[in-house]
Length: 407
Length: 67
Image (cartoon, rainbow over all chains, first blue to last red; front, side, top):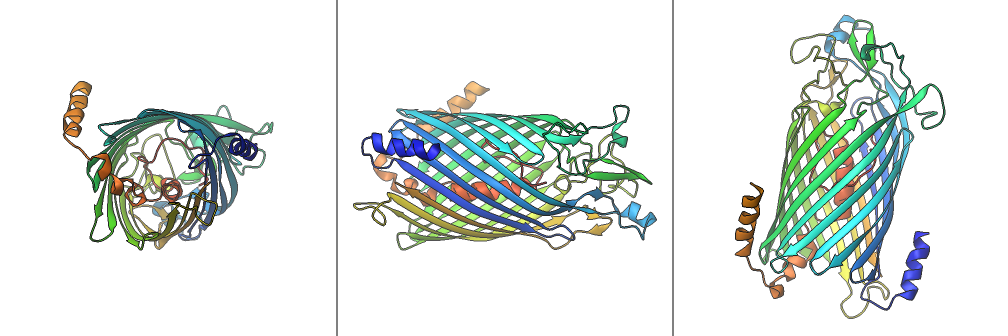
């Protein structure tokens, strides 16, 4: 359908500098801390058409092919000390296929643009319907750009039907995604609504220096637990992960780009501060240095440092132990993403980019960009253990390939 | 508060002038804030699902693919 529409546009529209832009990417993520191995392959394709100078339409698809294992039962050192011969940590195999289709348009008039889009995502155990709108304007000879984005998600998560007389301590985990989003009477779906807003201010200060400041707000309401995971709460007591229904998240991001003429390259610096209503605070610093080799090749090195505190209800062992372990009120989680940790990432990126000046690239393209990026991440967990065993060597490997062409 | 913020932005940015003929470097792909936006989007999708925070990468998204 999309291809037919674009082909029609190519035939009926008058000749322009560029009619269609195709962007595709392939990503691989792999990590293997202790007994969990996770492999994610992420392809994506976006096609953008500009039937006129003021109108752009796009459609796209992206996916995550997930295979591996995740922690099914979470316990800590105190429980393991009482049960030294018991392997309380179990893993569950994970096979999922996330598909996302998206589409939208932008309309530009003078220095102002408006856009709207929609997205539908589907996994074995998760569905997402999202709508987004955007407004952008440029001021002061294009030196200032202000943009606002808003999106609302109508998402739903598969879960097992719990005993109506049970309290959260008696909730059981979802055994598998088989039967999700069907009429299986033992399964149900839980709603999650997500409102996201972002405002940004981009500013060119000199011919070689520009900055960007962004504020991002997200409000989530609904089921946010991992339905498969259970947490050991006491001797013989295990319950499905149980975390708050509401979460409000704030982030402020600052970026700066500086071009070094003698070096024929640019330095990019990014800083981000974050806090949310679960009392997670985090800071992030990114640095990337990219340099031209000739007119079409670029090489870049990048580094990233990230550190966060744990959620207020985080504990590595809810069954006991010395602080910071022990019960933490009415909630419990086994998510290492909600524990205190820091991570370090470093990588390389190579880019080939050619744009048509007088004749087209390879005879038929107005532009061509090929990008290869490789990154290595190292997660260091302050408190998170698997049955009291610290998680060490938590490396993640990321490989990405991007290909973009204009016609 | 919002009015003062707006006035501040106008005063600060109104003094800055990068003339159109001086924008060649700013328009170069190497000056994009996120480097390559497609690669950056894939990286942030993978990273955001393994951290407790988010932000600064836009608002549109659907699902996790993380388990």
